[in-house]
Each structure stands twice: as structure tokens, then as C-alpha cells.
Amino acid sequence: MNSADASRIIEMAWEDRTPFEAIQHLYGLTEAEVIKFMRLNLKSTSFKLWRSRVTGRPTKHLALRSSKVGRSYCPTQFDILPDLKRVSQIVN
Image 1 (tube, helix red, strand yellow):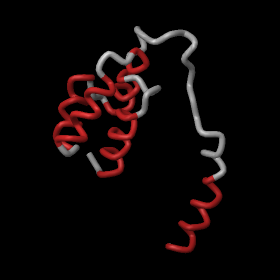
Image 2 (cartoon, helix red, strand yellow; image 1 turned 90 degrees about the horizontal axis):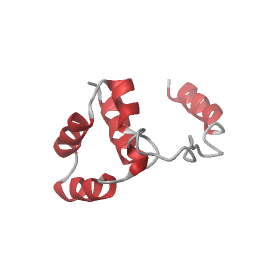
Image 3 (cartoon, one colour; image 1 turned 120 degrees about the horizontal axis):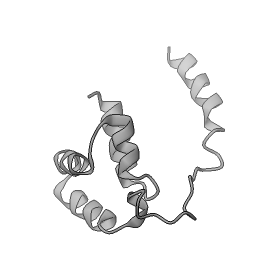
Image 4 (spheres, helix red, strand yellow; image 1 turned 180 degrees about the vertical axis):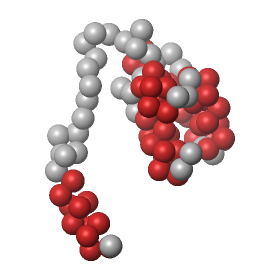
């Protein structure tokens, strides 16, 4: 696994609205494997904070989440793409 994938898995695991099933679909890691991955890749205190945050959180499991919880995104997330392409051209 490359560092970009590892970083994305950590990001998705921290996100409240991203269920473990989405991580499994994209990266093939079960919830238990995500927990093990996080334990290996986070500092001990960060791992404990993450575990306390996600334990019992219904939005982290598709079967438990309310139908009122939908996909969420930042309204400006797509505005950054032209800037990233410009930076990429400058760097390369």
C-alpha cells in the first residue's frame, strides 16, 4: 500500500459520515482490519481518541445509520481542482 492510500484510509476512518463499509469497498479492509491499521499507523494517544470517537457511532455502520444521514461534502471541495492543476503544472 502506498502512502497516499494509507493517508486516505486514515482520513476516511476519522470522518464521521464515512462508514467502514466504504473503506472495505475501496480498500478491501474489514472494520477489524481498519482498527488494526489505525493502531499501527497512529500514535497511541491518537488511536485512543479515534477509538473512543468511533465506538458506538451509528454513522460508521451502514446498517445502523439513519436514512436521514446522506452524503456530505464541502461546498468548496470542487473549487480547489483548478488550483491543484495549476500547481501541478508549475511543479512539473
